[in-house]
Length: 364
Image (cartoon, rainbow, N blue to C red; front, side, top):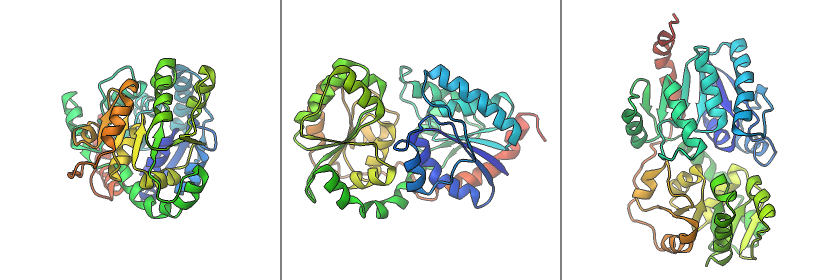
């Protein structure tokens, strides 16, 4: 069996690390990097940190509008698919690289496997929601991380090819924590924290938060006056908009350059709470039992909210949500995301589902 795995952005790099190891034990895999995230802090560091093999093909698509980026990816991916003729094209999550890979493959009758399928925020203002919905409807194999994701797919009439396998990040977080803990002392020094000092780990990167001056100003003010120091890896979009709006942080905020996954896990393991608008970090916080405040009004990880470990908030209610998260977390911590071995289960399912996927496209 031959697969092409598509990556382009931080969440995909994290998920491809254990998947690539699992698929290459048994089959031929070609890793394609679209270039959606292209600077060292947002791309290269993840390959070195997580032991991801260098891509066999790098498309070099970076920057531009959603349409420009996705259009360039479509053209270049189609050419790659026609040359390599894979049995599966494997995509992750909900980025522009995801939808471009799925659409290019489906148009030329190559089965699509979608890892992290079935997530829904039911907010079509989010580009990610559009990408994930379209990708699910194009896919022949849909690997759901949770029962809620399976239920979402069923509501949309998608039942064929769906497998509840658990979340790939279970594998990667479990493999990363021991190494991450060896880096905590250096990270405390880098951020000016005392050993064992409580702090909030924060990330803000979504356009809905960064590109609205009033919202971003409220977020900055909340970070500046929070009762805990705030360690903030600064996303390029956030850095740009802070300068454009003339906003700045107080000494309570410890800004750092974007971090690789191992360093993020090290800080997550040491922090008292997480404040974010990232989907992946919400889930990682839950896996490591850290209370989370999500600066959004919807989330695709609704089970983390329903269990009391995550709170959705608007910037104006930020401080109240953070204060609530600072109290002892719930005693219950349900196992939403499954046991380790997720990637091996996915490879098993790809082998099992291939004949049916080929038949659907009229192939022998």
